[in-house]
Each structure stands twice: as C-alpha cells, then as structure tokens.
Image (cartoon, rainbow, N blue to C red; front, side, top):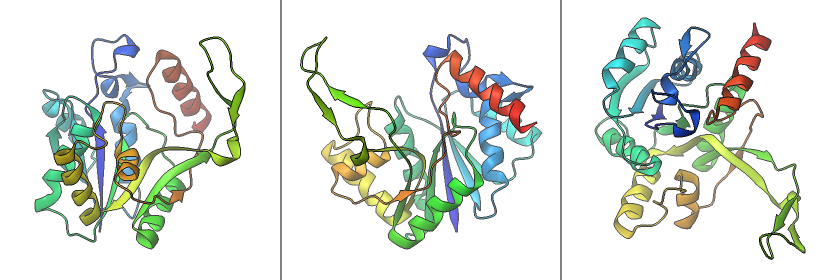
Length: 233
C-alpha cells in the first residue's frame, strides 16, 4: 500500500499573484491538478492526502471532482510553514496507515514528476526504508571568504541535489516527526523531511531524479513549465 502526501499549503509571494501559486491556471488547468494527475495515473499509488492552504479546501475539492482525481481521499489544512504542513499530514494518517506502508511526500508545485522517478523512490523505500529523488550537482560551488571573495570550493562530485518526491515507511516517518517536534530538531523554515531525517541521524538512500521536475516559485518558472507542456503536446 502506498499513500501520497501532496503539500499544497504555500502562498507563493514571489509569483506576484493574488491567489496561491498551486491554484494558478496554466493552459486551462490549475497547477495542483497537473501534479495530482501524475499520482492518479501511477499504478503504485493507492490513495492521496492533500495538505492544502487553509481556506482553500473547498476550492480544491471542486477541482478534484471536476478532473476526476479519484485517488484523493482527504484534503486537510496546512500549517504556517512547510514542515508544519507535512507533520499535519503525517499525524492525520495515524488513523489510516500501517507502520510498513510507503508514504510518498511531494510538493504540489512540482507538476512534472515522471512515472520513472516516482517508481524509483517507491522501489528504494521498499528496499531500504526510504528513497529520496536526487540528481548530480553540475555547477561549481565556492565558499565565501568575504561578500566579494573566495579561495575555497567544494568538489561537486561529493554533492547531490535532493528534492521531492521522497518516500518513507510510515512507522519511521511518524517516529521522526514526533521526535522532531518535541525536541525542535529539523523543524525550521528552511527544513524539509529529508534534512530533518539526517538531523535525527537517519541514512538516506538516493533514487532517480529528473531535470524536468522543477519547482514553480517564480514567473520565469511558469514560463519554463509552459514550454515543457508545449513539448509534450
């Protein structure tokens, strides 16, 4: 059994829009629906929980029904930051998931998740207990000496870019969030499930990634998304 938690609780101030970015209409369809369709069509996803921006739950239910996203079983309100929203989802699933169930966490504003990427995080999770989408880091990284100078760099062969989807066994995921909340570990604005897990001493296992799996945070990202859609058509 595999359950997806889709995080759609953000505001998206950098988009300069009057509505949350996950509800922006692109080519006649809300961004969040593109994301949900990828999970709806994947044969290994059994059910979906969406953690939505508070006050937008009814709007999202209307879209889910319009586009026949039948795997969405629950829509709940998110928190004030990403980690709070994910924890809301994890705590909600206590009544619906067994310890060994695979939980896939994904950003609602990453609408171009490939079937292969989603499959591989599930495979890695079943093998090792978790799987995190990753890619090589192809740019050079330098460490600041001052605001304007540097004389030290990081070997890019030691780096990986990690994003969502990520998959974890539910029992371990619930343990991690319970501990993190009580001890205030890995729950900052810049934290995510993967960084929290490492802060708690967990070893993560890399799964396949894709450069198309972009996170839509700026107007320029929207234009790139539109270009990918035109390529698919």
